[in-house]
Image (cartoon, helix red, strand yellow):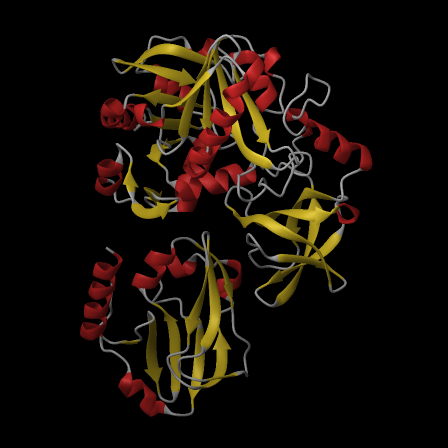
Length: 131
Length: 365
């Protein structure tokens, strides 16, 4: 499983890459693997506000719909329109294909997120719990 | 969870095992879409050992089964298979099943795993007035399905049975495949040509491996429950609990062809006849999403804000690359082209009624 060192993670399997005050947000390799083939991404609206821990958007795999939770609070600055036509990009490369960028209104929230090592441990625990 | 004789194979192949009505079965191996497309293009191998098998034997076997189900079993001949709903008196469905005729005194019924115990109880109950004996023999059978355009060629490598002479919905009681004596039928639940093998549980692992080996060059892949569902969905084959249930009659499900109201009396006939004469209030119809989104089982279908039905099955259709659904709709809304909305988790999305089946393959006649 791929867990890049330079990103921050949530326990709900989103990743964040910070550039200045802007956070790129996507789902992790663990998430895409467990969802299976992603067939639809309901992107958030540019300009809307999100709180950390709230649903940012939803992703539909063949079998089920799942929410993506925002790792940080702020305003949606951009969405990755390519996912509308090709939702499977999230399966192919979940780190290259971000879902949205968020103009953060509380950048300290990033500090509370997991680093790669802690996230890897969290994934192991979840795998074990799932049997 | 109960394990099929192929459980270890699924784990070794990287299958993602889930609880399917109490059975530990793989929902997928490499991925649902990949397995689905491989089955349409080449072939897929499915473990369907969870299916239930019930034998009916005795002097009245033919008469009894004809009373039990809606299709006309007197049209069966030895070596043929027939599909039929089995109804309650009120016309709702107990289950849908395959009927294998050995001879007029002996039949094999193949039923849904989730319904097996209920079915057996129902059949045993109803059999009391007849000179027959019903027996649940599910434990004696593993079942493997090989489905897809390459299925015949792959299977032919393991048997001397002339498969090209076997028609769709026929079977061989004793076919030797890979050195194992088994029941072989040209049947399936994918909308493709294919075969189903009923075999002793102890031989299942060996035959599974032999088939995978034989089909390697042709592109045979192991396929899970996920692909089985999307394949049957595209072909609009009904699934009990979704298109069929205790509360949905076979007429509402569009299975008129399998309901022979003019044959001798059978369970449910009076109410089905009445429903047909009065006209159906609701019917299963196909929907295609005009606005994007994935319609799913249980979502409400609306017209001008008012509820006009419910989605019974819905999915992204991998072969057609569309978001499609089967829905039980108020009969006023089922004409082709009719626009409705599907409430997809709080948002009303435009859809239109389209022809079914969504996917059609010509079977081996």
